[in-house]
Length: 320
Length: 320
Image 1: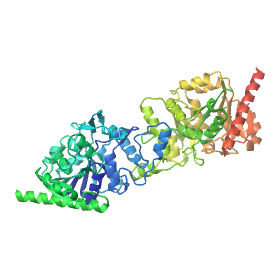
Image 2 (image 1 turned 180 degrees about the horizontal axis):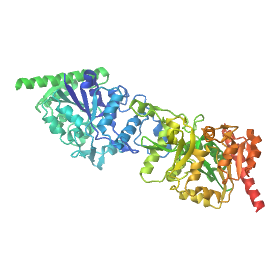
Image 3 (image 1 turned 90 degrees about the vertical axis):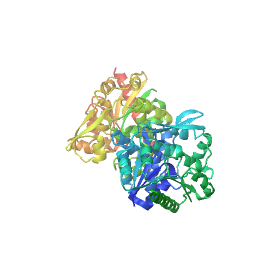
Image 4 (image 1 turned 180 degrees about the vertical axis):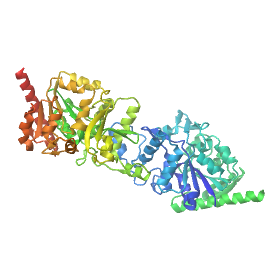
């Protein structure tokens, strides 16, 4: 068995990555969105990186996966007393990673090195890699103007109607040497796009300079899992965004977002009726339970996804 | 009644300042040592400033006055898991002030402005002023070499034998405009040196460029309260340091440290037998209960100290 690369962001992405991790251990490489990162109080907050760290370390809150289990808010409450900003709120435990990350970056260490050290210290044998060491910031083009995702999410509560996205800095951002080595390694087995908002969790990863072409031409199966079940986004605001941009909020529409990159698409078994619609895009389709309520759900979905990728690979070899 | 200026550091200094605050409210100006400040995780920790803030706001821990009441250590525990340094440990609530302070300084605000804003937000009507907006760092000259107070205290647990002190940056540090205005105001009534380590809590304040001469020539009573009762320091390591520097750890020796600055010295009533020894230095002496276990003790000592200063003033006027 070779290396599995998972492109991920948000809680849903971390959950499937956790399923893959429990099956493959050190052979999983999770490539994580940093387009939603933001500076607050002089600290660099990387919500998707930290969600992935807590999830793979088994210390994520069951009800709020972006926070460590048992999170408290004492520092934020004191900050408010001293006149500090109400938003974004932050937890006590969740402050630790931004503190160390910011200090590490100030000491000229790369985000990748810092993140890999967090993995080692948390006992995570998989590699969690930021999508780039260079900053990329997802901007929302909305009816209220252009704003960072951070402003859209934390300050405006996802209110503005979304018209489009910009990934500021993406052209200058490079794929790190660590990630290049993984993607070029002969043992690379599959690339999995985890269920997460295509616009502000997955697209920023693909927008990093050279990433898209690298993945597309690598010659290993690329499969994506839909974050939409029925017409609803499982996590976050994907459905709302799709409607505002005039697209039907459906698994098929998500598949369309990844069209020239993927060979296989996983839809929820409740959406099996839509499988033909996705197939009409020229994709292999797997209908499977994609709602991950338990750790067993994560592992079961991960297993189905890997089998699906293996089948695509074999089919391709048979055709060649 | 006029303005009372209290020079202070450490928990003992904050306690007497609190007694003065409860008597005089907005007419108290606490001038606080910043020589023990240190950078950790990229944040500026000001232990004496924060101790004073928590104490006057009535939210200091009864058992550990440098921490807010009910302090927890969740952020530090997570930091350790991620591979961060064990020492110095920090509390969750105690992180808030360094976070806002560091951010304010990065935005080119002065430490004095930031501290006064903390006062307003905590509902403190008195003014807490750092001894200077410019950095001064107390260095310990020890048998193990020269080190910052921070290293001596946090890293080496006060182990090295002390030979002397340096106040790095003191010549270039200026008295802030806010403090100059207070010291030059015609209503200035008394200057109180609170009970605290003379070497690393009070001397750094006096070492700020121009401060010593300004206080000495101001013409209002300057009275100091001994931090030593019997041969023991009430707080911290004053007694140990005095012995290591070949001085007897006594109230008289502390009085000697402030000799050309003060007119009156307050010793503990248990040390009344030593009053003549202090008087032989040419000082007025008051013996009073200086151990502040309760808030009432703080107020009672503050009242005695202010009466003592008033008596010195009247005596001076009668002599003139």
